[in-house]
Amino acid sequence: MQELTHYIDGKHVKGTSGRFADVYNPATGEVQAKVPLATQEELAKAVDSAAKAQEGWANTNPQRRARVLMEFVRLVNRDMEKLAEALSREHGKTIPDAKGDVQRGLEVVEFCIGAPHLLKGEYTASASRGIDIYSMRQPLGVVAGITPFNFPAMIPMWKMGPALACGNAMILKPSERDPSVPLMLAELMTEAGLPDGVLQVINGDKDSVDAILDNETIQAVGFVGSTPIAQYIYARGCENGKRVQCFGGAKNHMIIMPDADLDQAADALVGAGFGAAGERCMAISVAVPVGDETADRLMEKLVPRVEKLKVGPYTAGEDVDYGPVVTAAAKENIARLVQTGIDQGAKLLVDGRDFKLQGYEDGFFVGPHLFDHATTDMDIYKTEIFGPVLTTVRAQDYEEALAMATDHEYGNGVAIFTRDGDAARDFADRVNVGMVGINFPIPVPLAYHTFGGWKKSGFGDLNQHGPDAFKFYTKTKTVTARWPSGIKDGGDFNIPVME
Ligand code: NAD
Image (cartoon, rainbow, N blue to C red; front, side, top):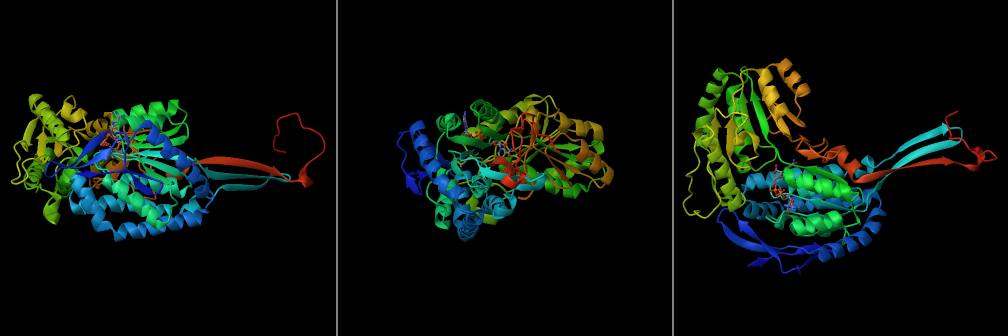
């Protein structure tokens, strides 16, 4: 059995706690490795050496720091196949989807190569006679990233790219379910020239997260995961005086207007609803056709597409639409929620409950499910299922559809399919959700824009990546300077005001 490690001071380091978590191959259901769960002491030691390394890294000029990221991008591209295979083996997603996971992370690192420009401060010459004012952005020190299982390459890179570009050291605590890719990324950072200690990967569970939240050296925490944990981390981190941003769960609606191209909408729904087995925070999990006629026509197009989906192991390559879910517990939770949908009266048009794959009977595969005639009081509508289950709630008109997305407790992503520019514009303006797609089902913004949900999908003031990340990972210092020629004799006892 492979024993995974932590990555501290540029080396793989065995865990000393004696506690481990199982890492599965979700396609076969086998335990393929065990990952150590760090103690508070292991975390504290890693933080201490990160703090020492951070001083030198902060004093390295931003362009040299950017060159390390540039080389990292080259190395990740060199190792793309290896990374994608390791990712699929632990997560279960298909190889093309795993490459997308790596690629969308890499794009943020590419954006961070522009750090010298983004870190430039502001300057006011002659704010008053002989007085200049300038602001500079300085790194925070040691920061932490706590990441979820569903994007084991992308989200760690969303954290480490901006944090390191700004001159911080980072403690990355990846998901214990698929920790290999984050460890490989840390190795590649070392190979790219990142000084030892600037990026430390600490594997662990709640104990190490609590140790991060209570550690006095760690200045900021960036979290991505489920909403209850996001709320917990936000509250405890803030209470301990840290800068915290936490991104949580989702229930993303897609509104289908009567004038939409229904073939396009149906294609978008199968891709966005079932890709990665629905284990995406930007997956579409609720379809909202407007009007019964639209709904009936949409279902006619959707049912055969959902029935045709190919479910299988990543080793089948391009021949599979989606793979298994991450654990047996996730599979059971999905089955439980599907049952509540049936019990509460929704109509199960495509029933994936008996799905079996020959040769992979112990894998965590879940067949595709499509519900129609669900209502907003049902558990399948209110809860994030995080599986291959698409729930249809019919709306009688546009206002009702808009209200559904707006009133739902989550506010990560939303989409509208329509040919009507007025409706699309009104929707984008009024909907109470952070990321909006117009005829675009998964509106994940590109690296140079920012990513973040509203309501219970996001806690904190700033979004991930884009310019916001550079604000989150730096603090502003403002200097007011007057040189001797501008200084008058005598003390000034009143608050200075502009002359
Ligand atoms: P999770 O909340 O179970 O775990 C996320 C991280 O928190 C992991 O590193 C885990 O070790 C840690 N953790 C788990 N339980 C903890 C506890 N009790 N105390 C402290 N730390 C704990 O999430 P997950 O299952 O890995 O990921 C799926 C969730 O993440 C979904 O809800 C999904 O919507 C969400 N997600 C959100 C975004 C976003 O940007 N909004 C992106 C990806 C995933």
